[in-house]
Image (cartoon, rainbow over all chains, first blue to last red; front, top):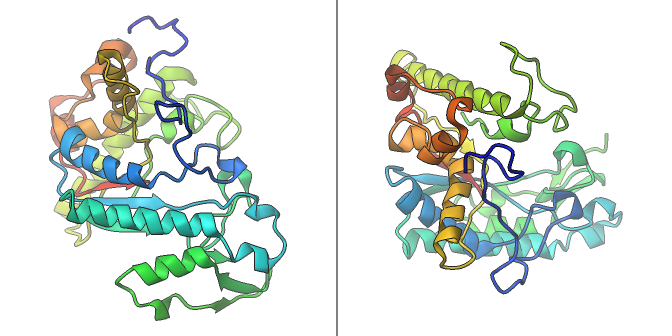
Amino acid sequence: MSNSSYPGYPECAGSVSTAPDGFPIGPSGDNGVSWLYDTPTGIRRFLKHITTVLFPSVPDIMVSEFGFAEPFEGQQTSLNTILWDLRRADYYQSYLDNILASIYYDGVNVTGAWGWAIFDNFEWGSGTSVRFGLQVSLQSALCEMGCGANYFCSTSTTPPSSVCPRLVCSRS
Amino acid sequence: MRTRANACTSGNWQYSYYPAGKYYPAYNNITGGLPARFTCGHYTLLAHAKVAKWYHNTFKGRGRITFKNSGNYFEPNSTSAADVESAQRNYDYSLGWFNDPVWNDGDYPASLRDTLGDLLPTFTDEEKALVRGSCDFFAIDG
């Protein structure tokens, strides 16, 4: 473990994004975010592992960032195509379901969940080619809610869906 | 307030390419590589702890303070002891690096100390007391 010339030093521990049977762990996001997979059962297990095994003195936990980059959305030009962001919708529904399961079945004190992100934005080195926004904001004159946004707004108990409005914004 | 401390690994301290494309300025002749990564983490954690203490004790803020954590969920690939240890080492080097001091005993995980030795800075007893309990809740990026 202390051999600093070993190529895996210092972690000396690897990991793969496949289940033991070799199947990938979940649907993947855009190619520009190759680390991103949709793994809803994972968030439930993770919340439990953090608060019971790794750091049991944690009083409460929040999912400070979770969201999905619909593959190839940065290359779509038609709003009609973009609005059906079904992978993103599925991601939000199943993650929210599993966070609720974590609270009510596993007894984890989850006190918040923050979706990333309400709008498309500059995604590090990928810039605007990778889109995480629940609202379409980078391409058209209208900011529209896609399916993902509808799930996020309808499954939250507060605020009511009236605060997830259709925004009109001007193209810069 | 949320900070993302593990950027010390990829973010222009240990390596030069991401996100700024070059190394950040070097102090005390620590120019990149593992010493830079763990020195960066050490002072980031101490800075967080000092601000948290000021916020609660001096400023008497009504909010809650933590740093957000960007780490993966690991499961052993099998029931072998090596795989179980490997999963835990992955946690030690990602979440454990910053959270063992805060939530457990005020010090880095034992596996980091054993493997890195002098490459890993040390906390004084006062610093351990400062860091321990400096987060009010846990923030995990899913």
